Image 1: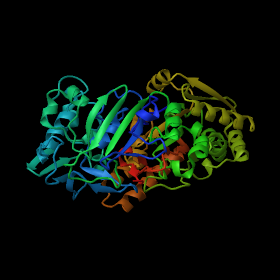
Image 2: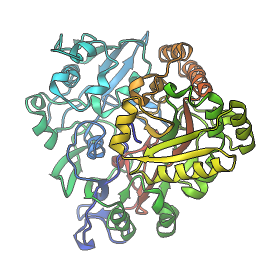
Image 3: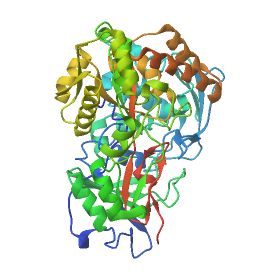
Image 4: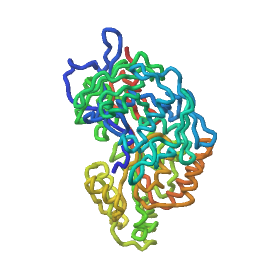
Length: 528
């Protein structure tokens, strides 16, 4: 059950003969007659839209957009469209826009460009897909009322100071603003886009490393490096990227093996062993930071049915090591924390004894609780990975006389059951982050719309609020760990495993990530 797709998108699919491809048949990115380099990237599914996050075109959008901030390989923030970003209180942030940056059509980018864009996207009446990301900014509620007409047309929390400066006031202290502004949702738009954003989406005028030269939504998108671009360019970035649409990942993978495509991100677990044999170390890269984690979640309205001892026992019959190594062939790593390893507050063993396989201790806990019933374990019937996990847990439960019943449910029906607070047991859920910060994993638990757990804890919530207001990362991390400990103690969410992103690629295309999220336009061409 994927509650947030979070920019994690795979490449695009349609088989083509080697002779017709720009990518070299010997597994090397092609070099054209004028010495420029070109790569072909896989994009899963039709390119229905480009601008905005969480869609099959988001990898394309990343290449076209220069956000105010960026995230480096280690998950640290650096300045891109902004010259500086500062705050004395974590509430009001002053943004100084970098001088001399323009859109690809030459239109200058000023502070007013960002203010106008934020007001347009943040207004619910404009129905922009990235509107949700503006929720923490002061004035969002007035622009997006639950009922009736908006009470404002602009954010009360955004103020234009001069041509190069504007301020953003948040609803409450939030030291994640440097991360937040790195998202596609905050990409600037030229004034010409506001009149017809649907038409703009088909031919966006970007401000990033690349420009969109061609778009056939069912076939491909062709991007070329913008020679006028003034900002940060990834090392070894190709001069041209062709995002080819694929509808079948196996076909895409075979094209990479044959040298007909250069980059396929998020190789499915079933192809990883095959990839190791066919591509070797030079052609299969595991991103060393994770941004996806799978959990068991237990809604608190079932606490009387499944007391804490039962929930603890359930977690202790899960052999996370075996599931990761034998079932998923190292496509996952066992999780002992609610946060992945891409987050600075991550602790490998935060979960402690309850994430360690211990059938005897689990059996004792069940006996202590007096529980004799059945635990129905719901999961999406479309997800074969979750099905394998549920079966493994069910088999482990039998060894201690506990009955866990795998319960496959169609994805749409499962979402409705979760959202209606009608679950009859735990559910397997996937969570992904928009940026590598603890708030994405810990604060999110306290937002009921995310997991529908009906969970609250004043002490944990206070730790979250204090963490977001902390003046330093070290101070914040202490508080994030405290809040995580509270959630783990209540056993409402149990870590299962982190998903490892494997990238299949030709030997001259080296993949690079942003804090764990592999971004295709950052692919480094290492052969001439």
